[in-house]
Structures are given as structure tokens and as C-alpha cells.
Amino acid sequence: MPDAYDLLVTGAQVVSGAVPSPATLAIRDGRIAGLLDPAARPPAARIVDAAGLHALPGFIDTHVHTRHPGVAEREDFQSGTAAAAAGGITTIFEMPIAKVPASSAAGVRARVEAMTPQAHVDFALYGGAGHENLAELAGQAAAGVVAFKTFLQPPPPTRLDEFFGLWCTDMAALREVMAAVATTGLRHCFHCEDAPTFQALQASLMAAGRRRGRAHAESRPPIVEELSVAAVLALAAEAGARVGIVHCSSARSAQMAADARARGVDVTVETCPPYLFFTDEALDRLGPLAKCNPPLGTAAGVDALWRALDAGWIDYIGSDHSPFLRHEKAAGDQDIFQAPPGLCGLEVLAPLMLTAVAERRLTLARLAELGAGRAAGLFRLPAKGRLAVGADADIALVDTNAVWTYDSRRALTKSRANMAIYDGLRLRGRVVSTFVRGVRVFHEGEITGPPGHGRFLRPA
Image (cartoon, rainbow, N blue to C red; front, side):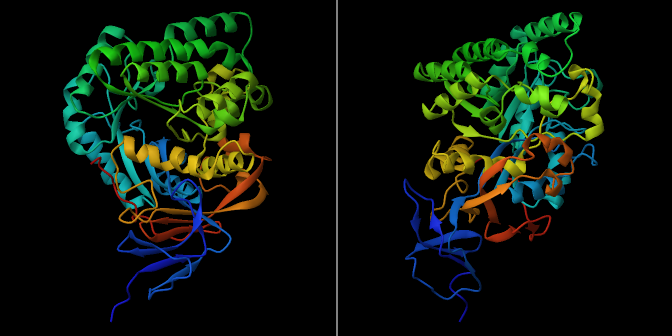
């Protein structure tokens, strides 16, 4: 007689409602087949004892740049998805930037073909929407992209190939791009920064000899993001578009989005842990190793962003994982404006947010919603983001009592030097095991699942 279940996870406090409760998770064919009485031990091929741990829905990281296929020494899809698994992340949304940008149907298919054999976790892919590729949008949607992404600032001159079809700085052209994306029914997500404003401020700072540390933040104050957000919201209202503001760093941006939502605009807001845990002080301390766009803000701005999150103005969180090597960042040691922007964050997304739970800024139920449930619903992935019968058995087993100090030398990303901002942080809560569709892909610091286990996800 065959075993009733493939796997039982026993002893954990399961986060599947407002309050964690003990249950035995029963898994069959990669899906949750039952949330059973905690004492239940039906026949199963394997049992994992999770006593003392909490079972959270596997995290969905909505904002990842592995850029594969691209510069393999920075990151490839195997190292990037290994880092994700180590962080309790079971699904990543890969951004369209790459040497083969996802800005056409052919580009989408090529990237999926390159990524699938290396994937430790499941993944979705953003398509690119810009002024250069309007005719390619329908093809990308048919190829299975989960959403579209547009940058509202020009790309670095040395990376034009990676950004083809991904950007638009002219509002008249953007109006056409947004209307075209709206016809696909997919969400249209934006990197919101007003280029003329930050370019003028940067030129003024450079003329005054201000080229280090906080000068980066001063060149892109919150109004730079807010001006761009206001334009997106106005165009979305006209087009009836589903839009998203990614890596929101300003509470005023989040409030503008909430106000627009109250008027009927379908807008979502994502923020990232660096904007909740660090201030522009890190730019003076670490220089280019703390540079990201939008930049880190003031202490008052961080507090305001937490209030925005408490108010429900922010829908979900993503890491904005952006791998660069130390020598690439070192280009900004003397001139911060010469360094590429971006931090790595896959492996610390869950520990940082668990620390916020320990500090009573969040509940575990709210973390499950911010980290998985809301994104699964908004991006039409019904099998993801929840611990419920019929859902994929994507599980992060976490020790909420663990107290530890972060050391980037142990990171699985190839760009571990780009995680210096987290070094020495005292964290409360760690990921013990990660399961993707019932297969344990990470356990106690080691990757335990094979590359190629991860699958490409299309929106329902």
C-alpha cells in the first residue's frame, strides 16, 4: 500500500491565520494536502521534526536582479536562487535587465531557457516596457511575463544593451506605453525618480566639490521620487491601468498612492528592507557600498515609512537584490556618483523582517502577508503565498528565538562584498529550512536541493 503522504512537517507553529497555531503539515505531490491535528502522524515517506520553529509561507521576493544571463562573476541564476533559498524565499520575480533583456517575446523565452536549468526556487519574470518596443508588449504577455517594468530615468551609457525597451523619460511617450501595457491586463511597475531634478541637483553638488557619502542622498531627496510617482498616478487614472510603485522609499509617495487608490486607481506599493532599517548615515560610513536608488533616507524618513507600512499603504516587500563586485563599487570610493547603485539582499530579507517581528513592529501574520500572500494575489499566482490545502508546499521554517550577528563572508551570493551594510547587525530570527513544492532546498546553512528544481511561473 503506498504511503498516504510524501512528507509530514511536525511540531511547528503554522502561520496560516491571524495567530500561529500548531499543526502537522501533510504534503503530497508538491502541494499541501492537509493541515492536521498537531498530534497526527499518518503514514508518510518522510517526517521532518520542526519542533520549536514557526512555519511561514515561503517568501515571494518581488524585486530581484540576478541579470542572468549576464555577468556571471557577479551572479548567475544558480547562485542567486541559492541565496534566495537561504533567505526562506521560494519564489523570485526576476527583473527584465540582462545582456539578453526581457523586452521582447524572444528575449523572454531566451531568459527562461537560460534560467530554468539553474533555478533552486520557482521564478517569474518581468517584461520590459519602453518607448522602443511598443510592438513587443503583447508577445511578452503571451510568453508568460508576470508584469511589466519601466524605468523613468535613462540607463547608464555603458549599459544601453541591457536596458533596451525598459525605459521612458518622455511623459507623452509614457502615456502611450502605459496605455499599451493596460491592454495586456498585467500590472505595470515603475522605478520612479524624476531625472531632470536629480540631474540638476547632482550637477550642483559636483560643482561644489560634494562627491562623497551623503552627497548621493542629497542629489535625490524624496521629492525626486514623489514627482515621478505623481506623474505615474495621473497617467494611470487616465489609462485605467494597473500600476505598481517599486522600492518606495518615501512615506509621501505611499500616501499619494493610497489617496489615488481611494479614488479608484489600481495601484500597489512595494518597499525594501534597506529603506526600513538604514539611514543615509550608512553612506558616510560605507560610501558606495551603501549606494542604492532611490537612496537611503533620514531617520525621520525611516520612521515615517514604518508608519506608512502600519497604515496599510504598502502592499508587499522585495529585496531589490542587485549584485555588483567590490571593484565595481570601488569606482565610487572617491566619487560616489561613479559607483553603480544597488545592494544585495536576498539572504537577509527574512531575517531583517523577523527582527522587526521580535521588536514588535510587525506580527508574524502581517509578515506572511507582506512577504508572500499579498504578492501572490496581486500577481495572480494562486498556488503561492499561503499555507493552505491545495497550495504549493512552499515553506520557510524559521527560528524566531535565534539571536545572531550577520557576517557577509558566509553569504551564497557571488557579490557578498556588496552586503557590507549588513555586517555586524544583531538579528533576531533566522531561516532554518526552506521547502519549494515539498522539496527541502536549504537546511542549516547548506543548499540541499538540486539546480533545476525551480519552475517558471506564469500568471493565472
